[in-house]
Image 1 (tube, rainbow, N blue to C red):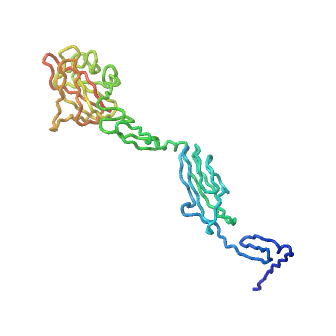
Image 2 (cartoon, rainbow, N blue to C red):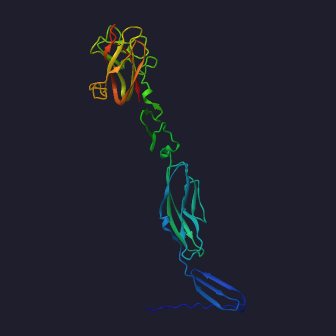
Image 3 (cartoon, rainbow, N blue to C red):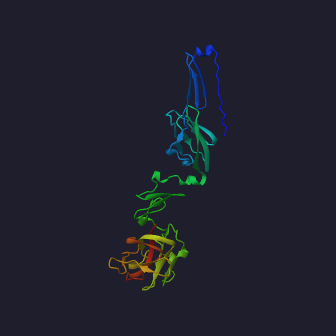
Length: 331
């Protein structure tokens, strides 16, 4: 194969050699010194190299409104400085690229989008290398994932867990509510006559004496419920399964109809009932009122999960029948 040789003939007038002269071509530098000598120098410049710390791909995910501060970095094999330039694509609105340091800073916009862009790293010889990067911004529904637990919203020692739709509090013993703000042993479900959160339809009884119905068996009511004797009971439907911590009773108002001792049963479905037990595993006998109007509360040793709670009189004042007015407490 024939080889063609090109000869570059440079003719310079004498006045050129009497002064400094320089011509730059890509990869070649031609210069003349004041004495007239020409120097041909091949410049062995390599393009910049992106560092391992800046792997092409995502630079991170940021929530809307959060501070963005990330860097891209390239090095010059010849040890020179690098400048950075956005050559295609778009940075997230509200962010900027520092041409000298390669740092992208700003605040994430209120959008849900991925921004893909190309940055060019250029050395002092004009050699360059392009890198493709992306930044993910999560806004709109994703804004709900911002850490809410940082403000310690859970009260009374409750532990907080961030979630997709907000946060969740895990409450300690004896506390409940969305923020663990409720003291369960003292939180009345609303059987009490002045509150009546539990409607009359959720009050029932077995073996009722005369017209003193279950709906009257509310704490602080003007009358009360009266049973016929052994086998009678007063039942409260809480409407849903709840944790029961405390029970309270009074007797029938202004009379000798009051209950001295009673058992408590509980159920999740209204069919299968269990007794509250004492320390020996037997049916716990709760002490009732010593008169018709005194309120007596009992805190359960261990809270129970129940929807239905029954009060079963065991003994009562000898002058009449077992009378009850009740309240239930819990979360």
